[in-house]
Length: 604
Image (cartoon, rainbow, N blue to C red; front, side):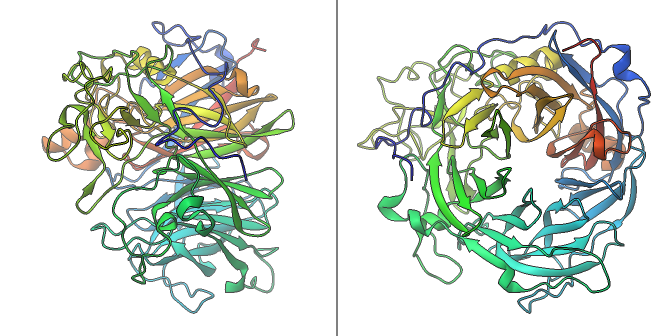
């Protein structure tokens, strides 16, 4: 176990102080749209679903370019019809989770400019190893595929506080399920270890919508069959499932700064035992290159857990701390009423609260990479967030009079910003001495002992301000400039990592602003912005068009991609075009889009 942090209400920084690798300035010409070299466009003919003029902005020394090739559209608006993607090289198939339909859509992407739907995977009616059957109404949440074609789907119970399933399938097959295992409550994400031997499932364990029941969050470690096809179907036994819990961190064993808060609600069995375990909600998982350790993002807790995969035990848990938005290079635009893009330093701290987490190695060292989205707990009558100007009303404590934020409560300053009411109170509970916003509006790189190596600071907001103009900090459902500044800004949701020409890149999806930001993370302490591309027409405001009488499908037709959720990098060696590709599932537009990743000639 690591040395615990000093006992404070909430750590002001991560385990180690922010180091010089944190971004402080942009290396990009914001006023000039990117001009790609001719080589970046060779053999690239925009296909279905590519808007006429994708937004693109690059650093002056960018080594790669991102070009949208084609998209598959469901025509479903704002119902999570495309969430998570996984690719199988041998069959040239892309698997896209459609939570709205409760299925996984199988796409033929042999021609990336025109992805074609083949069928949907069977995920209900499947007999599981524990004797249960996946019922109608069960929801597919995540999918992962091993190189040999063994695939798994995390499936949520219709009653989300009950245990879910992990369904096994053959990626090269006709869509039928091979079997299923029972896992924990609300299996939200699944990944397969690099050695292919195990699936690791983040069982989020969210409360019931009325906050009447709150199951434990857990991590399932499932031993996978050696093969997926052959004369005899692989054996699927419940004994293959082991569960890592958080019981070792109950009570005073909880590390400082890990957020456990809100009402103490009983589990499905009516027990109030294991409050910490019921409060922690595993969101996303990444696995070390040696397949021995899983790192689990606990978003609302603003923490990361470490799981030993050989023993299926949670061996460590640590807080990510907070970032100081009053420091130059770490500012935010905190208001939707300040006249547009106005990124500045403010006396507010940001909780990183990552959604997506990934990992890679550099010079033999493992690093974790997080997309610092932020999220609040709002279940039943419990509502965590409040606008700063509302602190002091309806039973909430006010901002302390001696706080530097006390004179900034107007709408154009901090008044409109949503902050957590669960952190920042003075010890006597009389007032808020610190204001904590949701998310970092950034992505970060961490060592596996909790040290912050790099943070993108305010670059994501500054890049999108330069690229989007009046659509800065817009929402995904509608185009409304500055509309998300009072919440979480561009909202970095998820990311994936890939290697191009010997360099390592992070591809970060911006859920609200739209598009993908690319950073060179080859040297983690020197990570640098490369390019931002958005296959979205910001002149189309879909929600407004529907309000004016358009059908969702018609309103979506020219909008492009809204709300990137899941990303998958496809290396050149596995790509149908023999060039690297990026697949992105967009939950609001219901589109699954493929981008080509090109090395710019002459850039080294």
